[in-house]
View (cartoon, rainbow, N blue to C red):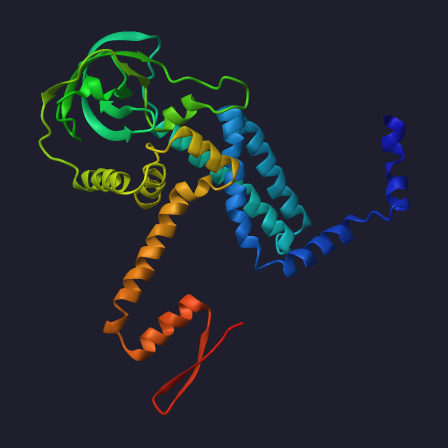
Length: 330
């Protein structure tokens, strides 16, 4: 080992290893890529978040050491150099990502159920999901401070247990249920529901063991949620089975009714992102364009031509004699 480090300068000389040349080359490369450098800022923040996901708060000391080392190295080579500024920004982006997820974890912290619990509970309905593919209704309840339970829990109800009860957002229900703490990953590195439940502030999950009783009707309803649920059910009933669930997921973002086999097929084909928020964005854009085309008769000929060019990839060359000349952009 001593011999290796003693001969290290000779190896560097043989390989023409000169730190000044390397830093200069990096500066030139960063100068050429300066327009792309801001795109790496989310990568640094995401790396800080990923580090917290792996190490938790215990990784803060190592991250601080790494960040300070990067900043000191930047000052050592000269802060006027682009490489020094990039290293400093990278260090701060890692710290920002790590600190943000750590603070959020502390902010959303709620008590977690310690053991399996069975009994009768009261709770106000805060979220309602009709999971047609599984034949259950999933509700999230706030239990209040008078019960020895976490403030927020999630229950699965069957249509038979709901019966004729008018289950709606804001209603207080009484039900006998079996609760348990959120499950962690089955295998190392697999899906960790306990972590997701922590950030959703869910302290327990379970299922109902008896019929649901409406203890107190909802005083005020969430109109947006009611419209969303009604639109979801309307799409499902008006479209063929299988496609209706997909259409509802694209329009309202409600994926609870998709058959597990179809959902797995979407994941296997790499198209699952279409059912998430990106699919909702696509629907919003299509709706906006459809509305624009429908209302195009209300705008000027120039506006209609601009809209047509935007949809077909062409561009306007000029206007002469009251006529609009359009040239293909291909």
